[in-house]
Image 1 (tube, one colour):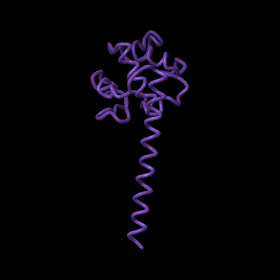
Image 2 (cartoon, one colour):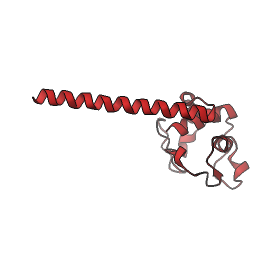
Image 3 (cartoon, one colour):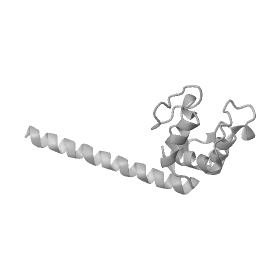
Image 4 (tube, one colour):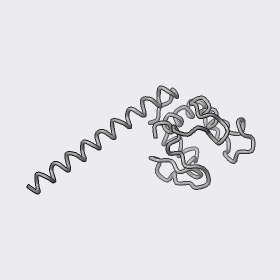
Length: 127
């Protein structure tokens, strides 16, 4: 009886894990369609450009910065950088050249390209 209950619990947890994985895949597909980017390329880009030194970024090892806002749940926010409406185009624009939108922002221009910014935007919208 205990073994059967344990088996049901394990199967239930596996089912929940499968649902979560499916939901994450769906979020990634929507983010790809929104941005034209590939979220799979973003963790390496976020590391290369040092984004985690200032931001906490889910799923990026070592990205635990506390200088700037955490980047979890970005898709649900109204504004980017406190100044731009949250749209895919504005997010890419912000990532490439934040000072064009807000000259006094502390966020530096990193040298990231537009294509790389689309990948990063897709990743952030998928999380």
